Structures are given as structure tokens and as C-alpha cells.
Image (cartoon, rainbow over all chains, first blue to last red; front, side, top):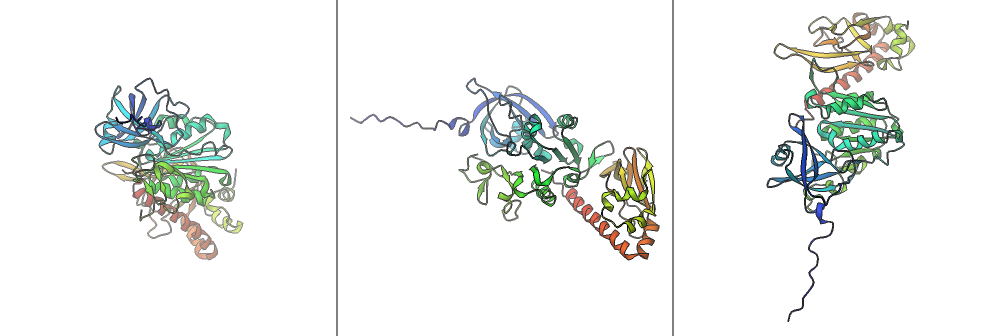
Length: 290
Length: 151
């Protein structure tokens, strides 16, 4: 007679949500620009009470039957009951997610990765530079900084987009700009005569930002080329390389540093990043060979 | 009312210039005010002035008959406008239009060129600033051309 052997658990207790997608229902879908949408998600079951995350972390979103994609969380970390993701429709999975209607079910794994150092930056000036869709991953850090405004010195937000029609979170930028305790600089690369704001690249507008370089933490997020030139500008203004943080993007798949798809030199973007101090990745950042 | 010399001394483009050179440059200057919609310069017109913007905002435009005026850059307080007056035939290549009430010091470029010719130290001092301004313009133009935000 064979012995009855107790079967070991076939999945680790933390598997749900990390290895297996949890089901979320689309509560609302909002068009931001021609090809970019913001989805608000709520748990489809009652077993998930919230989805705590750090500003800058990302989730893997599944469009069932189509694919899974890494998308930064762009909501307020203080409001973990709703998940907010801003998605640009560029491939099959993102196009499907962007077409989601309220009531649709999508899968969520996460949250993954490192966060913007918003707590460590307290007591310092905060310069946030974002370009294009890069405003989405940094928005949770902006929410945090504005909620804890007195913990920081000056707060400067510099945002660049291709044209006025490509500006993300337009009305929210207007609201932030209306505050007396934060300086918001918005610029576009080109515009028609109706545009009343600035025209010029982000690096040029940075000259207007006021901060004490030796006591400044900078958060930079956007296309690689924009970040490269922004970092150069920050370094030339005297901001220390270990106080410049960049959010990098690669082909993230597992989210846990197991599959190796997002490896960049000695680091895995999904596990060691996506937020890095610049001095940690400077030898690999925007390097031609990788 | 502040003198032209004091206005220029406070302007970033002229920062650190010696009082002697500043006085020579200020001698070419006059205060000018523009209402929203006024042109500071127009394409193909003779470049008579080089502007140090004191306050306001100016759009630098290329006019397209099909698309109308396209803004390629804005010039704000603390910046300078006009970078072709050092090169023959001394004509503007773009339009520049005030987007709001804009105050500036206009420097007579004919007089400025003569003074730079007569005093090469002044000319070199001016050209250093001018070269830096051009380098910045080229850098930002290159970034604009590559369409960084394109997918």
C-alpha cells in the first residue's frame, strides 16, 4: 500500500496578484489625447480591499486572449482602492485595453518595481521633469508632493509635449498651475498661433526653474532622448547625479527579474527599477550598444 | 525710469559685461513696447534691431500659406531675439510677434556692428555671448527636429 503523501502547496502564498492576475473591472475610461486613455479600475471580487503601491511602480495588465503589458500606475498612492492607468494604444494589447468599456474585466499583476524617492526627498527642493506620456508614471509622485507640500522646499514641475493636443492631464496641469505653492512650466515643441503657452523644448524651459541645486532632488520621466538631455541640463545646473532619478522602460514581462527580458547591463528594470538614481545606470543609460 | 544701461546690466544676456562695454552697447539701445499682435520683425525685412526682452512673450513664427502662422519657439523675458543681424544680407528669416504686452530694449544693429568693428574687445565680448546663444538655439532646434515624443 502506497503511503499517502501530503502534497505541497503548488503555489506560494504571495502568488495571487504577483504570479496570477487578479480580476479588475473597468469603472471608467477617459480619453486624454488622440491615442491615450486613462482607465480607472476597481476589484471585481470582494477579496481585494485595496492595491497599495508606491509612486512610480507599475502593474502588468492583461487583455485576456490578447496579451499582457507593463503599465505605470498613475493614480494617487493615498487612494489605493482604485487603480488608475494611463495607456497609449500602440500595440495589440494596449489597443484592446484602450478600447475597454466600463464593466469589462481585465487582469492585473503587481505592483512591481521601485518607487520615486518622495519620502527621502523631503526637506529638499523637488524638480519634476516629464515629457509626453512620461507625466503618467510621475503623477503619483506629484500627488504625494502636493499632499505633503510643506515637507519640501520649492516644487517645480516642467512638462513638455509635442503639440498642445498631445498634452496629458491638461485640466489637472491647469489646476496645479493655479496653486500658489508650486511652479508649473508647460511647453510644446510646435504649435499654431492659438496656443498661448510656451513653445520650445523642455531643456530650454528648465532655465526658468528655480531651485537650489545642492539641495535638490530631480525626478525625470519621458522618452530616452528627452531624459538624456534633461539629465545633462540638471548636471550642468549642479544637481548631484545621485539626486537625479530616472524612470526607465524596457521589455518587461515577468515583473520579477526572472525572465531577463528587461535586463539592462547589470540590472533588471522590472525588479531593480523602473526608478533608478542616475548614477546607478549612467553607464548603460541610452547606450547605443544595449 | 531706469536707464538702458541698468536694464541691460540686469538682463541675463549681458550679465558680467564690463561697465565700459555695457555703456557702449547701451548707447545703441532704446526702450520699445509692443502690444499683443504687434510684429517685432517680419520675414525678409531688413534686420534693424536686436531685441533684449525685458518682459512679456514673443512668438517666433514661420508663415505657411496653407497652415497659417506656425509657432516654432517663444521668447520670454530674459531672452534675446534676432540672431541673423550679424550676417549679410541682414534680413530677418522669420516673423516675431508679441503675444501680450512686451517690453524690450531694441539695439540698433548698424550702430552695434560699427562699435564692435571699432573696438574688437567689445566685438569679442559680444560674439562670445552671441556664439553661446547660437549654440543653445542649435541644440534646442535639433531636439525639436527629432520629434522626441514620437512613438
